[in-house]
Image (cartoon, rainbow, N blue to C red; front, side, top):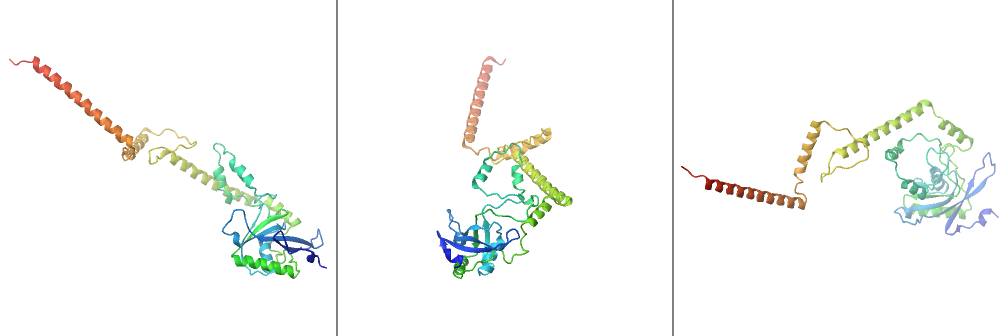
Amino acid sequence: MSSLTKIPLQISGYNILPLSLPPLPSFPEAATHYLYLVPHQPKIPTPTASRSLFLVNVPFDSTELHIKLLFSTQIGLPAGRIEDVQFEGQRRRGSGTDQASSPKASQNKKSKKRKRGSSGGIIEDMEGAALPPVWDRDLQTNGLTAVVLFVDRASMDAALKAVKSIRKERKEPLWGEGLEGKVPALGSARYLNHHSLTYPNKAQLLESVNNYMTRFASKEASQARSLARQRQVADADGFITVTRGGRTNPARQEVAQEQAEKQKEKQKGLDDFYRFQSREKRKQRAGELVRKFEEDKEKVRKMRERRGRFRPE
């Protein structure tokens, strides 16, 4: 009796797909790996969940090409029906170890306060200009999960139907068959390539560093100009934005006067913007009228006194 007859078609709602792992020089015997598939049902529904498959226990050497080849050539799904493959815990480019993308870790990273004068924002914008990676391909961790996004719901249903058909025919797709030479090799070749990537050519390394520093300096200068503009230009209410650092020396008297005149011109249209400003102006005009009235009364009184003392001959 074949060993596949002892394995159920499903377990806890997951469809079981046995995969045959080819023998390796380090382990010259074929082995069987079990892949579990189920329609994707995330805790928070997404627009693409209805046409996605959730894969559990993907092989450690899985790549997007492996998954696409498995569903197209080996299972029988027409080519081009897979839109995207997303692996859990993708390893960061350029690092030598696999690191899971933990939401808690990213939250703790964001919660750290940025030091005064740091260039964190510029560095975050420079992700696309990072140094070349030192690993030729990503490796997954054991028992990893993945989400396969199909172009439509019908393609996802057809993939599940094809998996069930293969199980009934008692077939085991050969993992990685047909990808020879299309993906970087593992074993000693992987680490030899890693060594050559870790110590690149001096000219190539210098070119990468110069490109990175040029882009960094350009973004830093652009950020400095933006902050300087905010410190010099008033907003609609006449307030100056307070920014960190970048104090400038006092300008010449002519320049300062010119800027003051420009500011007065801008303030002309904002004199009566607030109600209390109009009220204060009316009070000032009323006070000015009372003051002038008192002055005129005093002048008339003095004129009458002079007329009373002065007598013509």
